[in-house]
Length: 149
Figure 1 (cartoon, rainbow, N blue to C red):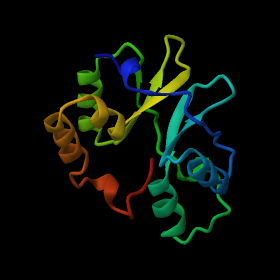
Figure 2: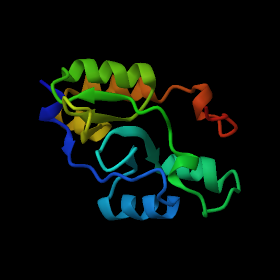
Figure 3: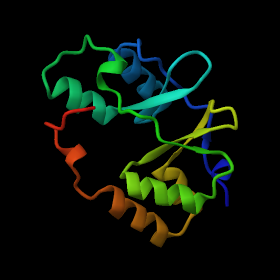
Figure 4: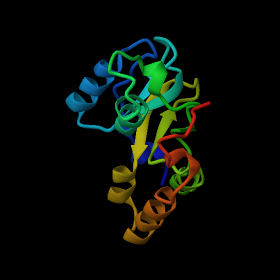
């Protein structure tokens, strides 16, 4: 099975210059917890902004809500292509300890996203459980005091 078979197509994206309020509203509208950040209108992904990024890096750090996506997003963008084998994508999610993967086409343009829910809908309970276990392990990045590079 390939990534293209399970990915959510045409995800909503945002720009680094968008406010975190704009990103949060887009998450509500799309019923999602993460949005790829593209560097320009050519759809090249440069990072990801998650609901957790907003809470930990803005609200909990008392930095206020008048911040921009670039102030809170996670970089660099970790991507796979549409023709990546799903098992390889799962392995990369586990190694990077991330819950969502940006999908790009052969030009590097953002065309989709693969989330844990997509994998759970298309693979075995065992494989889904292993993914959840690996990405949920504590890491330095899960510490709210973690300094973003």
